[in-house]
Amino acid sequence: MKPPAASAAFAGPFALGTVSALDGAPFPTLVTPDRRALDLRRALAAPDLTIHTLLERWDELLPRLHELAATASPDASPDATSNASPDTVSNVSSDAWQPLDGLRVHAPVEPRQIFQSGANYRQHVIDLEVAHRSPDDPRSVAEARAEIAAVMDRRAAEDLPYVFIGLPSAITGPYDDVVLPSWAEQPDWELELAAVISRPAYRVSVEEAMDHVAGYTIANDLTDRATVFRRDMKAIGTDWLRSKNAPGFTPLGPWIVPAGSVADSGDLRVTLKLNGETMQDESTKDMLFGVARLVSYASRTARLLPGDLVLTGSPAGNGMHWGRLLRGGDVMDGSITGLGAQRTRCVAEESAS
Image 1: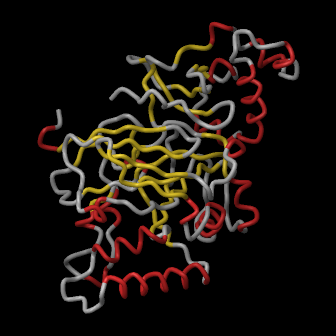
Image 2 (image 1 turned 180 degrees about the vertical axis):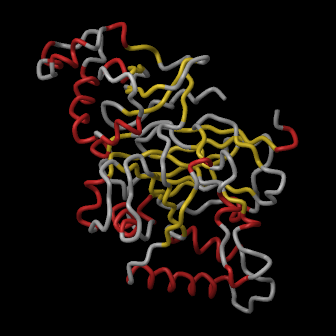
Image 3 (image 1 turned 90 degrees about the vertical axis):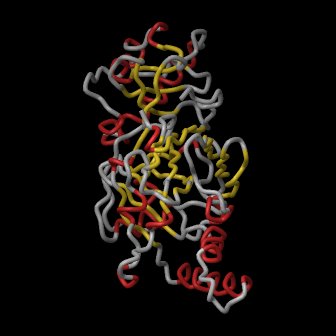
């Protein structure tokens, strides 16, 4: 699918992504707000470079990336590149930059691990609780909302985020079609802010956590609501493998925007439109646990690695709330302040080519 015109509208002087010529192999790129792309393999004289290996060298290469961004303008003043290293300048000529139009945009990184946060937006959880109420539930809507709000306040006070694991095979590009499996009875959208890890993180404190975050991207964590809870034995609980990890169920990107270009990850607008109609439009202020607390919490148990993703949960406005789930032909437009935009089309499995 053709990317929306505003796909390069991100905060800061540059973002990172993975692109390819229509018939070529993917390569890591630095993208500027004026929709110009630079092949980082050539610019950094690293022919085997990927976004993943770049993130492993994040502290070393971040200053070089800023230098490269300063060379983007063909009429850049001498002052713009005077502090750049000789290697940077020599590897970047004016013809090294190419228009972003005409390039295929892939998921910006291939993570080894995906840490997903559930029940992290106050209003979203309340809406889901009401939507999933049993017809025999004696509580009124107001009572149900009040009870779940009290549960969430307790979770926040006890510092207990809800984090589970997703599969990298569910990742797809920000403009790729998403095939809805024939078994998915209630496929739903969940647009989310995703933090991208740079330094390995293990048992890091909340205060240290942000030192391990390279930047942010957009994820749409699709979920089949019908298979979230096991039907054969309620005590088993949730089945995230079945409900969230079909191929292509996590459109990612288009870009990784460095953390230093995002003023406040706790104050970003998360917006999803379905066929042009706004469904989600909420601030990350509604999160119970911010990025630092989620990274720290996940690191108490697991070792987070460069390129890993920490998804922060989805705000109110999912399909269960609206009584309208995904079906073939639907188009989702997702955006987060300063991170660009993605557009994905749903294809029912029986009609997929």
